[in-house]
Image 1: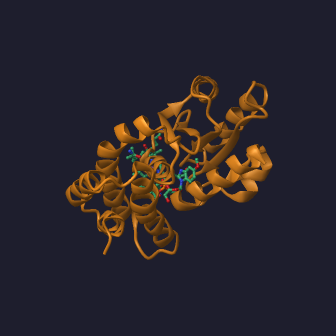
Image 2 (image 1 turned 135 degrees about the horizontal axis):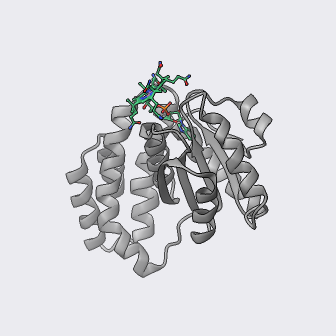
Image 3 (image 1 turned 120 degrees about the vertical axis):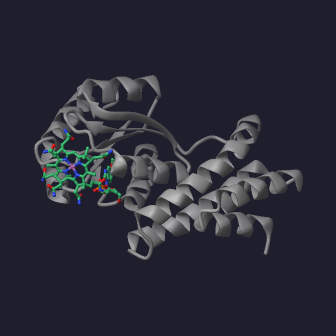
Length: 214
Ligand code: B1M
């Protein structure tokens, strides 16, 4: 098995130390950092994302795979910066005002990172104006909003209104998700997209970025 396949396989098993060592080995073998990222780390994370979507693996497996991804990225990130490999786009992600739930939002952040996005996690209980402020500051193309309560999901509309009233109107897309959120609610409040789970969120984010560029 090639070292890149080994990276993907070990990432899927959540073996953080092995992934770290294999990334070091791949670099010392002279493999391009961009290939290690796409054919090793992202390939493994992509499989986990698809399995998660199909209910073949669950939250704990995704979390340990994401931890292994992070361990590999710690070694790879400085090399990627040297070779100028650009992230797909930046995503600013947070949980709406009044809502303290962050487990789902954190998973979404991990899957976005796994898909090649630079993620700015702005935390929980976030004012709609802060989503806009942070998206402008980071030149984000994706604004991800999470809500877990029927009483706070209504605050998502405020984020969308603030984005539409800002300079981000044509340059960024708002995607929403969380247990009580539905496609019908997404349509009702005018969000650009809804994802039911973290793996779908990274697919959706890629589609939304393409819709800006295309
Ligand atoms: Co809360 N809570 N909670 N809670 N809590 C729920 C959500 C609830 C359904 C429990 C219940 O009553 N059965 C209920 C909401 C009822 C409702 O509104 N319909 C509830 C309640 C009522 C409350 C409090 C009001 C309780 C109280 O104090 N009386 C309170 C509110 C605090 C606040 O936010 N202001 C509260 C507090 C808490 C804890 C702090 C104790 C804790 C949160 C800890 C934390 O997040 N750090 C907590 C927890 C853990 C839960 C449950 C048990 C689990 C939530 C979770 O993490 N799920 C939850 C019951 C349940 O869902 N079974 C419950 C796992 C996570 C991976 O799934 O977050 O759905 P989820 O994320 C998924 C998708 O939804 C999606 O992808 C994720 C991964 O696939 N997704 C996105 C999420 N965000 C997305 C964003 C996207 C795209 C997809 O794009 C941007």
